[in-house]
Length: 68
Image (cartoon, rainbow, N blue to C red; front, side, top):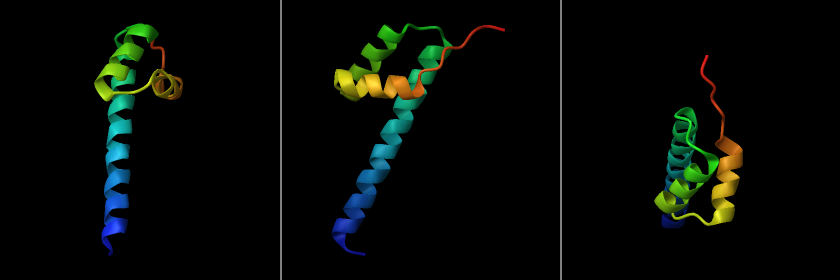
């Protein structure tokens, strides 16, 4: 396998891991009843995301949990 393909695979794996970490962070904050704003600021800082990038992840993974 050529070096370029290995690098593309490695980059894809890294992106997947980062997205999984972002998803986990968002869902954890939601589960523990943190606000959208607090969660947004956290993922922006922790993952060096722009406001638009963070908003897209929030729309994708935010789930409001209610106590039973």
